[in-house]
Amino acid sequence: MATTNAAQKDAKKAKKRKEKQSDQQKQEAAALTALAAAGGELPPQQAAPSTTSQPKQSDDTTTAALERPDAAAASTAADEDMEEAPQTSGRHYTLSMAVPGSIIDNTQNLELATFVAGQIARTAAIFNVDEVVVVDDTPQRKDGTIGSGAAFLARVVQFMETPQYLRKALVAMHPDLRLAGLLPPLDAPHHLRQTEWKPYREGVVQKRVPGQGSFVDIGLDRTAFVRQQVAPGTRVTLRVGEAPVTEFMQDYGESMIIGEVSSSLRC
Image (cartoon, rainbow, N blue to C red; front, side, top):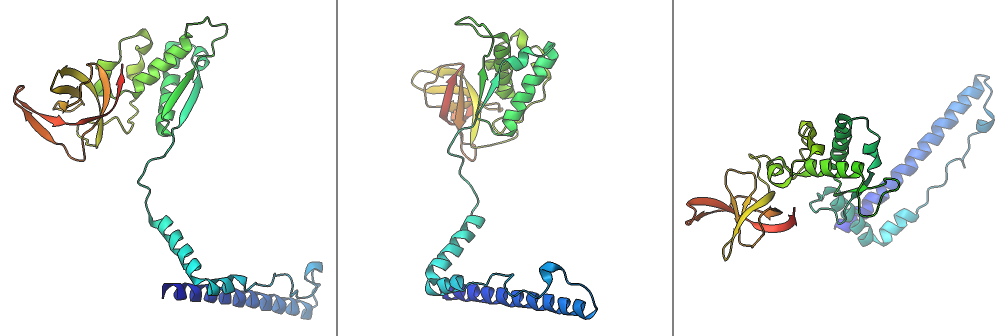
């Protein structure tokens, strides 16, 4: 029934197109006749009503739709599904952005250098860049050394990428970061506020207990607990589920959020 309706719709559309083209040709002929009767001069390209200016509508489309209604209906249904189905899965690739360290070397002072580095970090966050590659293009650089501009840029971008509640534990104090705290936060998707809850959350391991697990600070009023043994000071991404799951720890006298380590990075 669905295939027959699709074929009938295609046939009706083809018929309407033919009728529309015929009406247009009649209107053009009537206008040219009226102009000639009034004594006007016809343009060279419109000296007479042209019956070949419009290509003859082929009936191949209608014939094919009538002969193969199943294929036409399947194509129409597939197009509708693609338009209606929302995209729920992430992309299957990573996006990297390479930035030369000399962009910092060309700044005049620390304020401008910090501002430029902050704008680079913000641009990467806006366009969902997964990785920022700092290219050390210092001329005549010795092996085993890093240019000051490249090191400054990498340090500020790492500072900006780290969630604010983890910076004290993960980012060491350095003269390059003296003004980084004045930069506006990125508000990236993984920079969750204390009042927000998402299935994944960034944290840092505070301590581990052999045979039990590890305790993780995830920026909430409760500590998270994982069964895995992770070294203290490691930055981890915890899978905490759609809703918080807590468990009372008898040895510590408090309830803790139960999570699972999804990825980790030793800082």
